[in-house]
Image (cartoon, rainbow, N blue to C red; front, side):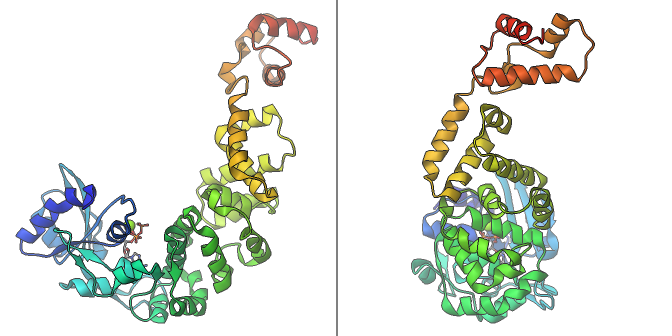
Length: 394
Ligand code: ATP
Ligand code: MG
């Protein structure tokens, strides 16, 4: 068993000693069977949240309405969710009622895909009532039960299906895909924040091209923010080496034809964090500058320089890894990498000129910076002083 499971075994034992059942469930069990790295483990138990809180002295109610309690111990924190069923779903998303149950099988039955409905006990024994292991072996994404009902209940599952296609390089079961097509429009009932989480995982996955093509083929894209008007552009994406690009680079490519002043609003519709929006805007700006000068590279910084080079290569049919390497090198070769590397400061200029501070200081510093970056001027205090005199700036 993986180290993370072993570390959690004592938690399962404590729950069992108190007379309840407890298992590992969800993505960690799936990834363990696939031999993929595991980041966190989810624990499901027949004990109710109140019963869990009686077993462990230190807990936090992180999602108690849905049955999740965070157990805090000396060895770490553990999320424990009570076995539950869901019913209602009158609005294509949250269930109207969550009912705690004592049966593991009932809990597994409410889960989205067979590969996510596998449990493992503390000894490593697998409990798999819906043949998830078979589907893992066949690399198949298939809903637990009737796909039409399951997507109708919770439309987010359709986005999850596509992100697993990308992440795991799996196929969608044909019936599951047909139901996805039929239910596509219900995705518009889901909060964009939740769609974004799945979309970013899709964009980070290794088989994003396949996932993107299914996004288009199923029609699901039409109901995602700003995608409905971009069909042709999104189709073009399928011919690009997307697998070599990260999520921010993919956003840059998606937005490359959008007017500069409209990019922010469009990405806000997707609820992207402002930091990512700025990152995308700066990347696009550098991509669009025909031949970026040293000053552009300096101002963009390392991350954006590399990102922009990759995006440009991807769009122009160039070699993305070569472009990445060249951009790294270009950045590393900059004579200076930050303003503080410059051999003179604003204070030096004020002393030399005996003038009042004002916008001229910034202007002069920028002129010096450009000259140094273009290797027309050595980054040396005395030389810079002489250069200023020569340029009638002294
Ligand atoms: P990841 O490795 O990205 O965390 P995951 O499968 O663990 O993938 P989570 O969102 O962490 O995904 O969900 C944990 C588990 O909860 C899933 O494996 C699945 O069993 C269940 N689950 C999550 N979202 C849904 C949903 N919308 N409908 C049904 N079951 C779900
Ligand atoms: Mg998970």
